[in-house]
Image (tube, rainbow, N blue to C red):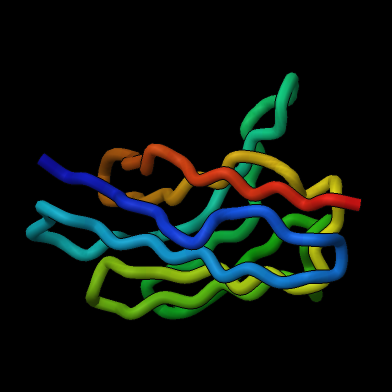
Length: 114
C-alpha cells in the first residue's frame, strides 16, 4: 500500500519560513509528477507547486517567487521551501504523487500569524 507522509508544518509569524517534506512508502515505481496542494478552511483544494520527473516546475501565482519545490528523482521524496510566508498561506498542505493514479498524503497544517 502506497503512503505519502508529510512533515514540517507548524506555526510561524508572517515573513517567516517553513520547509515541508514528503516521503513515499510502499512504492515500486517513481512518480511522474510530485507536488503540493493546499486547502484553507472553507475553500477548495488548490495547486501550490508541481515538479516533473525531469525537474520542470510550475507554481501557483500567489506563491511564485516565495516557494521552491524540489525532489529527489527517482526517489519519491520532495520538499517545499516556503519563504516570506503570509497569513493567507495558512492551510493544510498535501503532498501529491502521480503515477497512473493520484496519491495523496494526509496533510500537514501550516499556520501563519500576522
